[in-house]
Amino acid sequence: MRLRWDKWLYGVGSAFVGGGSSAVAAGFTNLVIAPGTFNLSTLEGAHKLLLSMAVTFGVAGALSMFFYLKQSPLPAPEDSDPAAFRKKVEAAVEVEKAQEVVRDKDKE
Image (cartoon, rainbow, N blue to C red; front, side, top):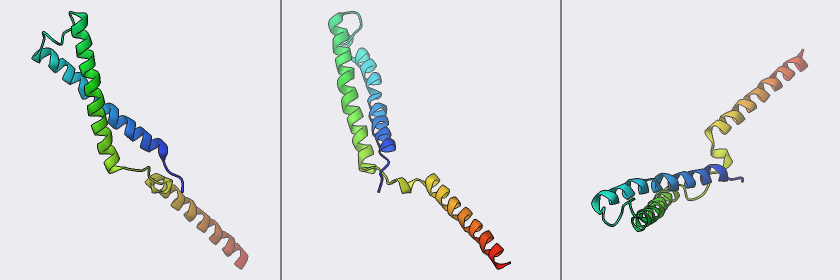
């Protein structure tokens, strides 16, 4: 059985980045709440702001990624793709039609 690692890893990565993107909002919220500590006017304030954003990105991204992993703990088998299944069914139907044509010609 082959697993769809590409789509699963894409989902894990997109969940992490999507969750981590809230770090930008949290960082700018820090500017409003504590402008003396988190600011862009001093090197120390900018460092604290960026560090706060990085930590928030990691935590929020990890939480979103873990929620994704709860819903999809392992990659799905390749056969679980509805489009691929439909193509297999259509191919089987075409083979059956071709076999009927051959059988009809053999009867003549």
